[in-house]
Length: 144
Image (cartoon, rainbow, N blue to C red; front, side):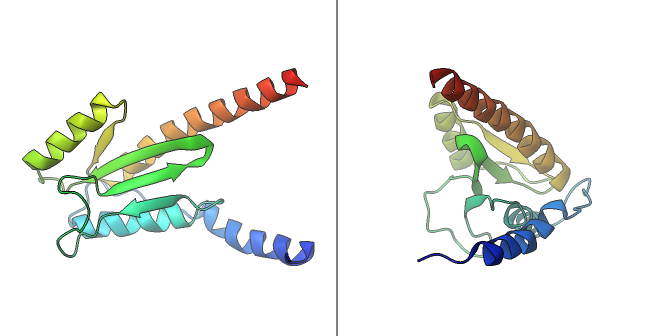
């Protein structure tokens, strides 16, 4: 059993309001936690919501040592891996090893030091996702 169309549309409008939320880029986040919070808020404000896996920064992580802080699932089957650092933060040996292995598998772990860098990365990835989606739609239409 679903919800009536008018309720769904009203819900979609409420959720879509956050899509155009303005996030002012910061040249460099002074605290890594602040950068994490802004990224989470941005992902949740998208329509449809961007799902993500987030390694906690307030205590020792329970995921693999060296794993990126974020794995974000974008529309069109694209995935973005992010390792957040402060302006002066450095990658650990484990983080470097994880990033190297991800590269071997064809993925990139992006090192992000500011919200502006994050926006640049996801906007580039969104462009790829939109092109892939359009190409898939075109192939589907041609197959009919």
